[in-house]
Length: 176
Image 1 (cartoon, rainbow, N blue to C red):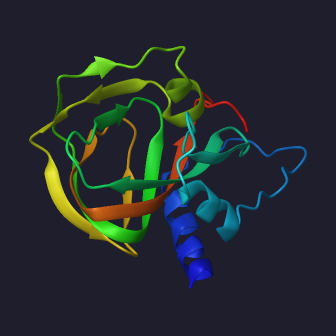
Image 2 (spheres, one colour; image 1 turned 135 degrees about the horizontal axis):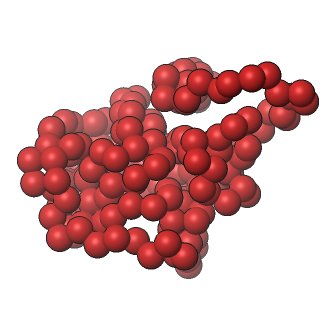
């Protein structure tokens, strides 16, 4: 079942990867991210841990794969990533996801922060979204969030665990 999910996730990723001009002279190696890697990332929280498991050179752009687990509670942050697109694949749980609209109380992320350099690139965070499209997401669902699109979990139903693939055409995210 996990292999089917990963295949679906990769198919969605290629829908948002920019076309690469010119052939590479040397093919890049494939990178494996195992179910165990994902489960380890979703395990007990580690202090100052960022959600990306790996960030790789994919030939003209970087691709990051991470995993996140969020619990219900107040103050889920809203975000917009200026340069990095994201694909969410829900492993477990459910939530209400709002996309589009305008961030409420936006704050620009410092350019030298770990979040910008190692997680999801430059952008802003906010306390919510004004307007936007609201949808319920659950296990097995995927959502593609293009760069520049505000997004926010306005409600989490108990908890949600998901894989996130980040497409970074500007190669902003540090390789890991």
